[in-house]
Length: 187
Figure (tube, rainbow, N blue to C red):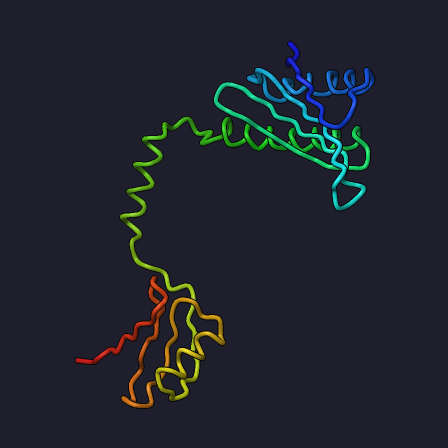
């Protein structure tokens, strides 16, 4: 069975040769994914493209029950663009099939997989410290800390030694754009 193919053109004439080429190449996509119901190929000539080599555009859209896959490629020749778009759509079909058909492979149901994952998570609930960082603190006041935070590109927080209180403080940026300071106290 071949896939019905619809060819839409913008700013380009679809010659018989191009129509046959599209029909023969795109109609074979059901070899890769049998559930394809229809395919649409858009061929366009863009006059205002920045690069002259990118003026011919081929876009392939494949529809089936529960999925839509699309690829678009540009080239200086419409046949080259079509070939590149076909290669890309074939890769997307393989990726879709991999996610869809090659799932768990061991025959377990999704409920069993979720239940075993929850049990494993409960057993190993200790947090892992992935990184430790040491740095020297230079005493500064709050305004210097705001300036340093901006200069370093730290968007969320900045740890500094407050020269006024001689304590470690944490400067953080609030959602409204203002700043807050955390002043920890040891019991």
